[in-house]
Length: 144
Image (cartoon, rainbow, N blue to C red; front, top):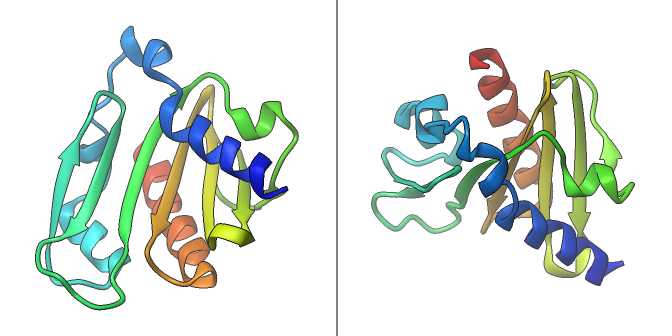
C-alpha cells in the first residue's frame, strides 16, 4: 500500500507536461501570495513557478510551516485511473484524497470540468495537511 501511494504521489508530481503544453497555465496566479501564506500559516511566501506547477515556501524559516505545491495534470489523473484514494465531496466536480501513512503524506486530486490538478502540503502533520489541501483546492476551483 505504501509503495502504491508513493507511485501515485510520484505520478502526480511528474505527470501532465504534455497535456498542458497546448494550454499552459500560470499555476502561481491561481493563488495570491497572501492566500498561500495564510494556508501555510506564515507571514510571507516565495512562489516558484514551473511549466505546470507552483511551489510556495515560507520566506523565512518558521518551525512547523509546510510547503505547498499545486500541479496541473491535464485531462486525466493517476489516482483516479488506478482507483486509489478516498472521495472528498464539495470540492470541484470530483476530488480524491490519497494518503500514504508510512510517509505521513497526502495529495488531493481535484477535477474541475475536464481538468485535473493536485494539491500537496508537506512538512506538517497529516491531518493538518489534508485540511490545508482541501482549503487551497476550494480557492483554486473558484478561479477555474
